[in-house]
Amino acid sequence: MLSKRKGITVSRQIMDDQQMHPDATGELTGLLNDLVVAGKIISAEVNMAGLADILGQSGRTNIQGEDVQKLDVFANQTIKRRMEQCGHVCVMASEEDDDIIPVLDGYEGNYTIAFDPLDGSSNIDVNVSIGTIFSIHRRVSASGQGDEGDLLQKGSRQVAAGYIIYGSSTVMVYTTGNGVHGFTLDPSVGEFFLSHPDIKIPETSLYYSVNEAYAHHWFDSTRNYIEYLKTGGGDRKPYSLRYIGSLVADFHRNLVKGGVFLYTRDKTSDEKSEGKLRLLYEAAPLAMIVEQAGGRAITDDGRNILEIEPRGLHQRVPLIIGSKGDVDLAEKFLRGEMG
Ligand code: AHM
Ligand code: MG
Image (tube, rainbow, N blue to C red; front, side):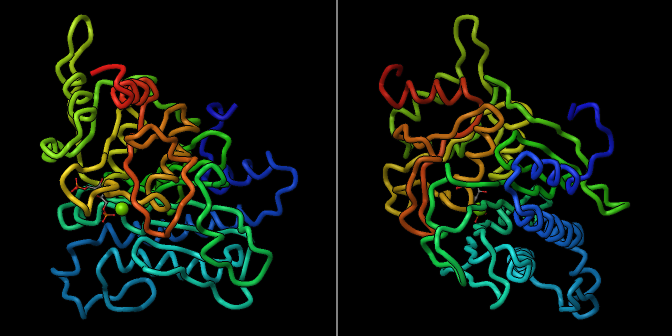
């Protein structure tokens, strides 16, 4: 039925999702709709990236009437401002902030949001796709301002997760646990329209995404797995490497075309002893999306990402995510069943 409809807006889809939950109060719908607004504001700013230098910093103000800021700071502030007064959130966490972020007094709601405001930010200055990733849980505390405990919930308890990718076009992908849908922003009318209904990630692929420069630091299981993928053999085709260095962009390509992304532990560096990516802002939300699309997400010691109990807001986690057949194969190498 989904595919027969035409011109479906993201707001329409969010309301349809709500109707699948008879007890729903509309709070999650309201929250997601406010996130859509934040995404549009950030998208407009991203599209102006670089022009500030040409037009002159003082000559240009942004939508809030302020001087132009760095994009990652702008994205962070935009989401915080929308969420703190939307009335549906009790506490927030951002990859860019050390501590939990309160909401405005009197506006406390029943949900929490954790977000990476602009993932892949090292790519901002070079016109490579970047994106906002978000993860939403129902609060566990009773009322008032939320606390860290509300945010430190495992990924399997997420009620919604998604991302907005600012690329050749702006695309929002989200799930509320009833499949994954993608929407493309039509900038001429400022509306997201359904472009990728009920996304299913291909079962296996011919692409792997990893920073291969770290190969000499990898554990043998990772090295053997990648070697196996890229060398092919028998009637198996060799895989190709696709690595953008912007997780949200690498993930989106793999979700649509099939592929496996890895950021595993690093043998030599303490700093990367748990990989680089963050559980709350990156791994858990993308894991919910990939599972809803028929894929898998695990750590490099075979744990399901969605079952990890977070110990801290900025906890890092090794991540292997993508097409189910490719992740299953990685697991065999991790277990020593292949290699
Ligand atoms: P960021 O949140 O500071 O942008 O860092 C996360 C990014 C991911 O988007 C990307 O997958 C990874 O860092 C790339 O790291 P590396 O340069 O080590 O390959
Ligand atoms: Mg990031």
